[in-house]
Image 1 (tube, rainbow, N blue to C red):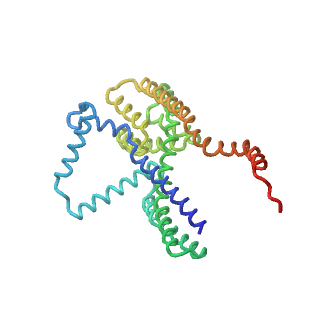
Image 2: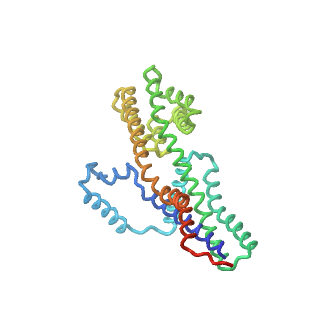
Image 3: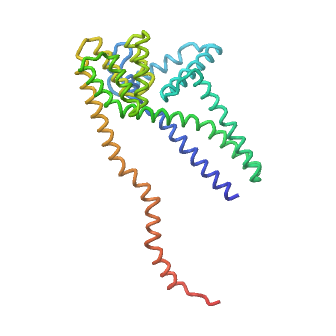
Length: 317
């Protein structure tokens, strides 16, 4: 019974931590979303202060509630389409592509709770747990089986985006060298694909896809915009916007790439400095809860034992 209580507390703590992590990730706002909240969609002018943002959100809520409610079939189709598009976009961001990627992910997401429930039920019967304990264990198994695939996908997306963000300045340096040497943008992308196969497979794959799309006849601007949507990285989105703007205005591509590469490298250095400044605060919790108690026991333990020997009289047998 004590083991079951400890196991329940442990699983509840893990689920609470996962729920808090998921809530923080969903509440995190990206730069384009904040920019969209501060700019009027009709005129393109910036909205003044917090009151403008609040007014924009109130207008959106007013339009949403004043609109005519859709029919049931239309609502189901709309929701299923949004879910399908969002899941496929997340799979693309994680680098999981293929004809059966979405169906496989959906099967894993809905099949893992069943597998977890079967294993939990087999363990409960073998351990001889009571009925309320079995119900609680099965409930936790269902929740864990449904959440774990989503957590794995989020972790894969974050890892791939971090890899692209870290290697993008080096890729831009190579792109600047290729453009200044006289190569075209397509040939420069092909060179990045060849050179970054070992250093950054994610960046090499993304530029390879862009190059293949342009060779297949897709316009360059559409291929670049598809790259920004497929990766979901802010630095890639700013690079795509710069390339599209440079192509429209006819400015020097090498100079624009050099300036953009310097800004990305500066941003990466600032991110490293910020992460280094946070380490002192993050080390407080391991020191207080893990190292200090063990240190106190090692230092004060022998003294406490000697004091107890002196103060507590020994009762003869």
